[in-house]
Length: 172
Image 1 (tube, rainbow, N blue to C red):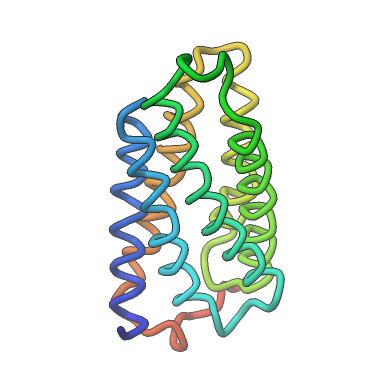
Image 2 (image 1 turned 90 degrees about the horizontal axis):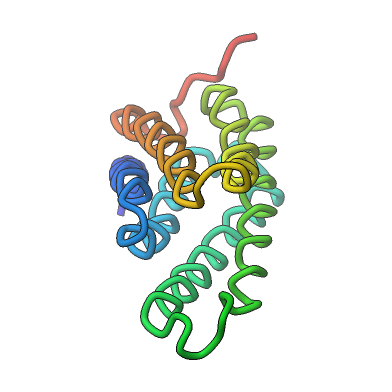
């Protein structure tokens, strides 16, 4: 599949995932399953411009989003029948997702292929959403993350026409 098609698919998957995060709680599993597709689109766009940190962040986000999707689905299916709280590995998946998105955000800032706010959004969206879920209802975290993920997907999708190698660098 060409870079342009991967970027287009990744942008579309990220936007759909963002909307599904807003459909708490039912869309969360599908949104988490779409995260790896979106990340592959971001990778297709930036792969020439970021190094090992970006690649490590990409794989960590892909792996932990799949772990999170399985954990959330299992919790919705079995819920309190097996335990009173979500499984420990679901918490570890969240930590992995936080670290992976932070690594990917730093690599995005260094690559300078996407606007600066995209790198900051990768770094800050999940921690802010989790922090806001304390004083506000838990579903609000998904709304915040979903809106940011939707904006990131739109930004990726708008870059679908140009090949990744020809993306203009951001001027300071």
